Image (cartoon, rainbow, N blue to C red; front, side, top):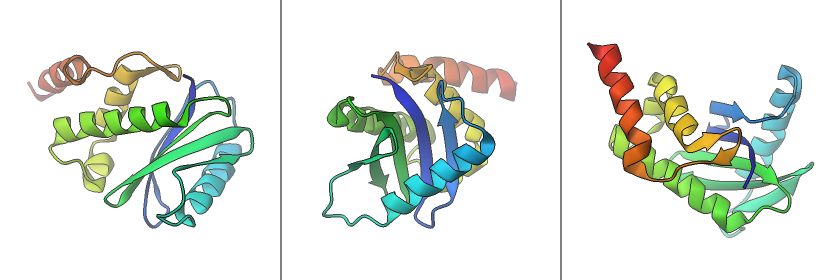
Length: 146
């Protein structure tokens, strides 16, 4: 599975975290893409499915409390596998932060990026085991705190 980008957005449409993999987009193009994705995602009702196509991407999203976790993938990718990855990512964040919330992501974006980097390499899933993902993140946190 190849993930092209990940977005974490609150209910007001403010991007809290954005990570792009192997997409050579300018800042303006990324901003326009994020705006389109967020507007379309926030306008959808709870009764609609959690994925839609936009441009050359398939957008797969899931809402957890006040945050939307969105992944842009190739059109031929499996939506359910992407949803499963998003859920795994949220579980790892929950384990690290203890009930992750928007403030955790805003206050410690580096930690969220470290966790995402442990799970994804150039958009490909490399690990989904919570313990092995968090081990280097915890070691790095201990090193920075000492």
